[in-house]
Amino acid sequence: MDHDLDKARNLKLLLCAFEELSGLKINFHKSELFYFGDAAESAPEYAEIFGCQLGQFPIRYLGIPIHYRRLTIADWRHVEERLEKRLASWKAKLLSYGGRLILINSVLSNMVLYMLSFFHLSKGVLQRLDYFRSSFFWQSGNETKKYRLARSSVLCRPKSQGGLGIQDLEIKNIALLSKWVYKLLTENGVWQEIIRNKYVGSNAISQIHWKPGDSHFWSGVMKAKEFFFQFGTFSVRDGSQVRFWEDTWLGNNSLMVQYPSLYRIVRHKFVTIKQVFGQENPDISFHRDLLGTRLAAWNELLTRLEDIQLSYEPDTFRWNLHQNGKFSVKSMYDAMVHCDVPVDNRKLWKLKIPLRVKIFLWFLNKGVILTRDNLARRNWHGSKT
Image (cartoon, rainbow, N blue to C red):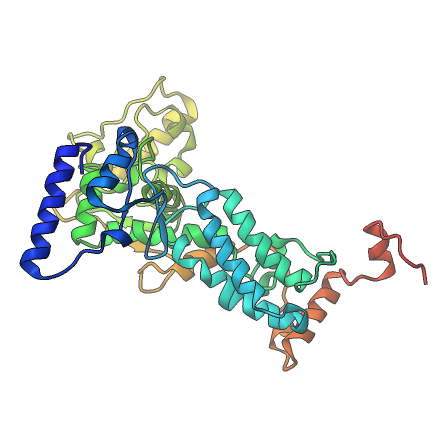
């Protein structure tokens, strides 16, 4: 509602009329009034009109914090409180490393997935969440400080690549937000139409970038978008949704990767294929004359473009990480978390022994067991016996 006391009185009158006509009662004592901007000075008057209390942002709707501005680290405090409350009910000191690992992956990591699928969490928030998971794994609820035998980045690697398979929340956040990019590209519905009208307009989704004033949700989607398009390929039809230089549509890589010397000097980097082929000849201009290797690269590109013909059908997008060409969060997470580490621990994790023993063998293989030499590296000043 606009900041207008007369409109507020009229709204209260309508609500009272609704009560009389429907026989239903609105409990204003349990309701809260939220305000921002210039309405702050008149907030007590609004509260008196409606007979309700004044609320404070962020609002929690279905567990999600909602604010008219960008959420801060303090606004995510309730998530930390949920983790602390859950950890307080667990007796970690009675659990082995195997038991703690199972609880971290099945409970602690999953408690925040709902939030990760809607907002891009800042580094500070992610570090706090990792702190709680790491403390539970290493400290076992004991106030006495214990050595952490491996970095979080190592623990978050897949088991096949030398890690313990704990979920990397930062990568999971990007993969979950990428789901919205895929839905905007491939599906049509009411919410897609609203988002396209508000943020995209007549442009291609790949052309849109974050700008001041965008919602927290949309800014997160825009950050995930840059990673998302690295793992997909467009099939060009009308060319309206495919970026000429940045997207993969001609060959196995984008044209900016195939022809970096041309991309560096092109005038318009973010044009779509439809904009380029709007005339009989490709409409591409450069900041300087093409000579030597650049001229040869340009001639090669023109030869490849001769067979391109646009149609009136919409462009299609194929997800390269899955055989059926459809996006999945798991496939993107696995691709992003992958690291070229020459480690093969498959035999270890296939052994028919308790998980706590497997983790001990993992420690042994990493050479991080607290033997005398490792304690000396950590400047331990205890007994030498």
